[in-house]
Length: 118
Image 1: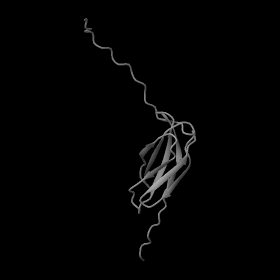
Image 2: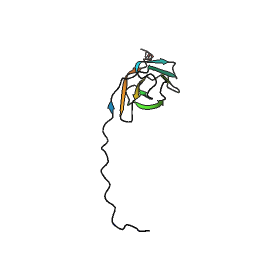
Image 3: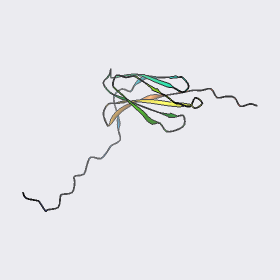
Image 4: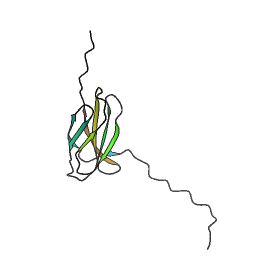
């Protein structure tokens, strides 16, 4: 057995991580059904079951966060445990690869605000 005592060469520079690219058709016909503490988001799949989706959402006026990854062919997602007095917004991303995606528009709840006594 022969051990090499020379220092290891420095690692080759890795590829620079580029911003993800938007490519391919986005999910279509994004809709939501608001059942107060539960919201169901639905969309159409432009790939016919060829790619997974990510559902992002959050309170209106705040940054959206990824809530779920949905398997290819699935075109709905239900969010439970929401505050019935707050508004929320959602978007869906078709994930074509680790660096390519297409984002739908956004859908938002529009809940009635109680009128303050006056």
